[in-house]
Amino acid sequence: MKNRKEEIAAVAAELFARTGFRGTGMTEIAQRVGITEPGLLYHFRNKEGLLRAVIEWRDGRSLDFTREAAALGGLGTIREMPAFARRNREERGLTKLFAVLVAENLEPGAPAHEYFRERYRAMRALVAVALRAGQERGEIRADLDPEGKAAEIIATLDGLATQWLLDPEQVDLVERIEAYAQSLEHDLPR
Image (cartoon, rainbow, N blue to C red; front, side, top):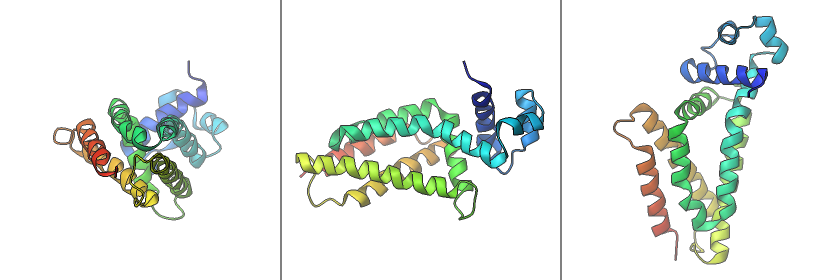
């Protein structure tokens, strides 16, 4: 069972995904969870604090999954990409929330700009470590730039998710990521 803070974060996440952080008011969130705005502020000092809680709530599971996949190393990590896509498809609202929040926080000074910048740095590092492990095992060619390929992989996953969110009838997220993972399995070995 969710505690009150988790319940509030879940409602805020739903509203942020629909109307964005900037387009969602604290009063609306408070009304949806059946408390007053001062009651909401009791749990979260301000709207930015609520935003941090929503991001942490959403991202905790995503980062755990990425760490587990990266720990496999090399082609094992690549083979987990379709599972990542299936999870995103099943949790469409959370996938949309992530896309909305990243877009709203591109500018320096935005409430979660630093968070997302550091998150992407950490994600690139995890994937680069996985690719290096594959190089060390001899399953990925030695001339590959792990950092550059990590940026490409993450950009492709995010880009496909965005296209799927915009046009799910035309872009099958799982199918496209399965195809991309297969192309990586073909291109990365010696």
